[in-house]
Amino acid sequence: MKDSKPNILYIMCDQFRFDCIRALGNSQIQTPNLDRLVKRGVSYENAYSSCPVCIPARYTIRSGCDSFSTGCYCNEQPIPPKGKMGTHLDDWSGAYLPETMTQLGYRTFGIGKFHTFPEQYEPLGYEVHIHTEEMWDSPELRAKDGFAKYISEEHPEYAYVEQLHGERTNMYYAPQVSSFPAEHTVEAFVAKKTIEQLEVEDMRPFFGMVSFIGPHPPCAPPIPYNRFYDPDGMENPVKGTIESDHEDEQIPWMNYIVYADEINDAWARNLKTRYYGEITYIDSCIGSILDAVEQREDAENTMICFFADHGDMLGDHHAWQKECFYEPSVKIPFIVSYPPLFTPNSRSQNLVSLTDLFGLATKLAGKRELRDGIDIVEDTREFLFSFYGRPQTRRFKVMVRHKQWKYIFMANGGKEQLFDLDHDPMELDNLVNEQEEIATLLREQVLEKCKKEADLQCMVKDEALVTYPFEARELARLHQFAFSRGVTSFIVPSEKSYMTSKHPN
Image 1 (cartoon, rainbow, N blue to C red):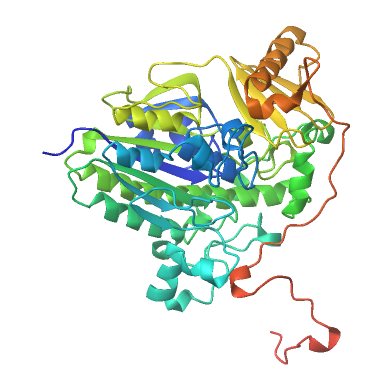
Image 2: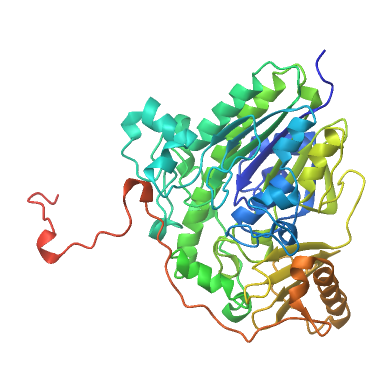
């Protein structure tokens, strides 16, 4: 007899802004299949990344633990938190989610981007695990990638492509088009492999993690999605003064790293058309997955959750990338579709976090394990925290949400921000000096949280948060060439090596 536990399918995107789903209020974008999920479930409109950058957010997803428990506060190798020991994060956090779900009687599969570090293909506990990572440091690592292998073995006509998901380095935020037709992109590959797993016959329910690389830059949708949107129909980025927007020193530093320090509004509008095009294309791939779920006999007993690891500033607040606590960076889509438990086509204002995904899956599997999260079915939280930057360094900063308020503390210079998101959703008016009572309340919440967690206690001294004299980092460019192909730099030819054509036209 088939197990009656529900199937669980987690679908995530990388760098997907919270405000890019049509059914949730964006009338410019086309997302018919995510709209299907919205109609089938509950949309959490106050969902946040536990740490707004790839690696720590993904370790939270698979462990159910916040940065102070994972020891991962940015794109870095996890370090055992104070009082913990081990080689891999699961040594001190506990078994990862896929291994836990296997123990609870589930067939597990993971397909897509997983972004572990420093071991790019760290075993995570899936019975079937197919990687599609963004880039590789060596030919040996590239050879392990599911999509790279698919291209080299089944479509060698595209083997010349150096960077399979678009050019990076100076082209990171340049509007692009995919080198592949829509049926042969990494997104199509992920959807195809997911559908294969959905068609497997097994008496066990399944737990699947589907992780799309996009719409993470480079924004390179395939034809015809590259021309779905007219830049004249795109809005300019929302900006305050450069001084207020760049109070977080991370922003100008990050802009410069990815050659985004001189992007004007026209460029930003064009880039947004490709970002939206990539989302609409991924939406079509998600649609094929939803169709495959619906064709199963147990479709109604399948919970589907869509979320992202973090967002993208896309020029708002004079900022690109993520790693800051403005809403476009740290706020995420979070849709839970399971009619037996969640009211269809409903909205929730409850504060939810990536930490809650572990408890949601294990609860439905019959043995709830919350770790640093909460039970979003039964419980609510009054304060939600997000962290970035290793404690006891200038990079450390923390955000806390409470009702309509968002408070941000930055150790670098001891800077603070306070926003009333009900009246100032674009976060243009810092009220930290005007709203002293709420600022004090949230500052004290951060202080108490740091006192409570062993790995954060170093950020408290004399009953106050530790600050450092402000210091801006030296600007530098990040070069992300096709290292696995031996490409490590720009070609700067000598004068004699320049070639001129006899037929320039």
